[in-house]
Picture 1 (cartoon, rainbow, N blue to C red):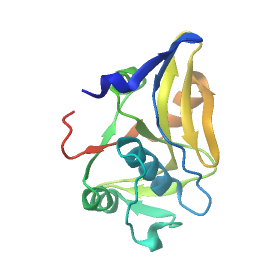
Picture 2 (picture 1 turned 180 degrees about the horizontal axis):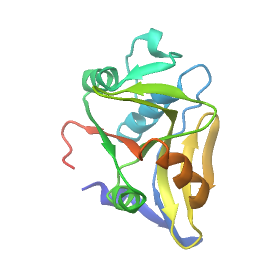
Picture 3 (picture 1 turned 90 degrees about the vertical axis):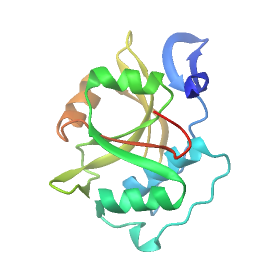
Picture 4 (picture 1 turned 120 degrees about the horizontal axis):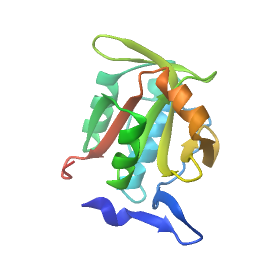
Length: 171
């Protein structure tokens, strides 16, 4: 179990954060690729991942393409439509969550049967008492977003979430 990766911040024990989630600046990557690289980097130290450079700044990304990218690098991918309640459980299990939120920096994520427009970011922690989530997004590491803003923006995608984990890890 990766639960040992979760830590309570001793300065603020109400913070539930997954340790060692790296930050990779978005720069000229699209937010989906950036988020995938961050989560794959969490599972592997000093990762080097291969992907088609045409994907780097594409504004359209299919779930099938994401799965192929992850699979070719030894990972599984699952798209789900989660809920604010499930977010804490997923974080507490040691899995960073790629959430698709609605804001100005949007890409199109295509599933087999729908198109989700939004911005992908990585959620790696939360604090229920202070009502905030901790995310890596764009060129901003360890950004704190109040629940009210985050959940409103996340709800616009139907609470779309992407989970990535190594093939040899069971969830």
